[in-house]
Image (cartoon, rainbow, N blue to C red):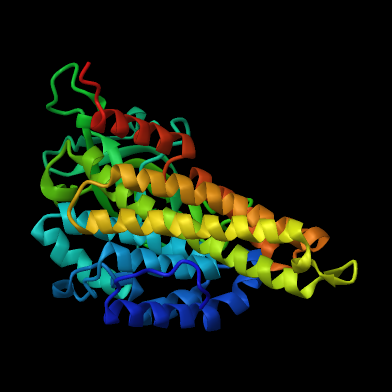
Length: 404
């Protein structure tokens, strides 16, 4: 472990968990990541190993069979895993968000039913807000959940969702739909949304009556993990699978989940940037030009200095955002800042490492080529950089409201 991105004030248990995860990354992920990524192959053996380590239950309370750890511990584990292969951290992230939403907002029956099996990884989570035509404008969703006409109390869901990470492999999907029943005319859009807990079989095609997962979306990077659409056609969901048992709370529940998810994305950016720095500084000492290692040239030293500073700054902001949430305080400002800075710096550090590699950075034989294709996803995942700046700007105006 190098000097960068150290975290002060960790407990012995936290240090032990991180050491175990780092060792797993070095031995089980890094040696195979690029090969699996080029094949766009799901990392089954890696996922099974993470189940055995208890990572899927890291933040699930001990009473449900999890480890009951903090968001900080989780984020630092994600940072380590993304350092090995960002796609693997994506497999965990959506699962973690659904488990968090259940823990915070679920009924007791929902917690008892899902959380113990989520802690072991038997039940795997995905969540779905976005749709083909709305991008980051969540309030404009058109998917609908309406009470079934047979008086059963069930809901029928209709619509098309987009960009589901783990859409094929997940067995539990938290789906945000509009539920206008009982709301007066003129009700704000975000007050007429509900989160439904949809149970399904893993796979593609029609995975249950009324629910189709068409197939994997072919992506530039972020391969291995399956990203899908979700098509609902009179998908029947029992009333007991409305998250929290009450309609109209879905937008708030999802935003709470995304808030911690943004800390996760910041952690991913930190991990990818760390790996890019490691690759860059190692290659700079191996490659010779004009009679000496290129690390001896001032131009390369400047790049390394800038890269290291960005790695350190992004890590510090991410840790601060996680600790704020763990303290029970609102952290949308800090999470937005951390996600924005970490994703931007990740892109820049990866590009500098790519430049250090010269022509070899363009070759698929070198790991930096994979990172170069992975980094852009962080600029748009969990809300674009522009959305983060809007969130941060609005919160700053709230905090510093003019008294004039």
